[in-house]
Amino acid sequence: MRFLLDQNLSPRLGALLTQVGHDAIHVRDMGLAQATDEIVIARAEQEGRVLVSADTDFGMLLARSNRSHPSLVLVRRAVGRRVEDLAQLILNSLVDVEEDLNNGAIVVLGEKTLRIRRLPLAPE
Image (cartoon, rainbow, N blue to C red; front, side, top):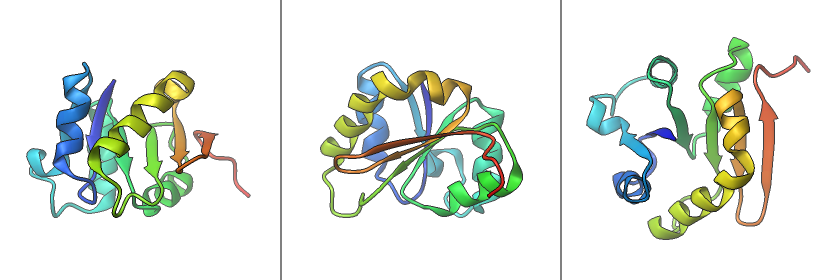
């Protein structure tokens, strides 16, 4: 799977995902460290990457835009969590969410929770 890691996550996460065969790149390595959320979303969509972030703003932006891509993995309570544990959480969840991510979804990963919302999100 191809991932784009947001600024609020450690670049080491990308290295750990890459070690097990995924294509993961951090926004910093793309020159997007100071980019707006909209630019980051556009780049993820353009490159066919799943955006990984702890920033809930991305979900709101995807909902408002009525987009079906890019998919988003939203990691809850990422602050203070060891990078290795975060990588394992993502990797363990891929078994259950890979198809959804390929088809366009927001996946919310908590310590012991997993929620999937298909894109585009229906208006409330």
